[in-house]
Image 1 (cartoon, rainbow, N blue to C red):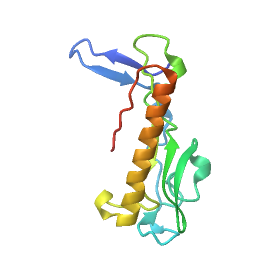
Image 2 (cartoon, helix red, strand yellow):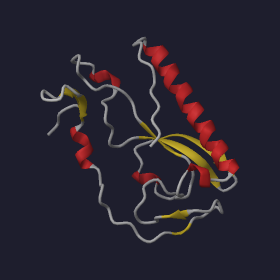
Image 3 (cartoon, rainbow, N blue to C red):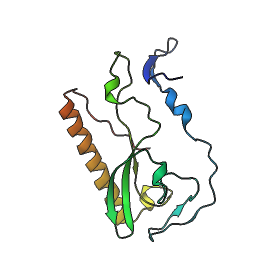
Length: 155
């Protein structure tokens, strides 16, 4: 199915939803190896053979958009989402086209139970990356004259 993402209205409930057929291509149930120590001394663990966001797996990423440098490489990075909910802006064909951009923000080099478990330095890098990517999104929206404004979701 080569259909573009679109907003659809549930005729029974009246709710709007996004239908994004390309997300079916995600490797959602990929087996992960047991975590091992991560390079760079930032703590946490890497799923060396399974996680595309871990250091050394850059070939699995769609495109690295921004990285914040650290002593042992990057501390936080933004990458283009390979399986987005929304189509890139040129797909504005119908009023119900689900148009937009999505990025994945990788807040640290290691797998952690949550943001609060990160060191203050890594948290600072993550917040700097959020701010930088939001500024870039606002600049793109202003430049294309669409009137769209960025929406930021943190999962």
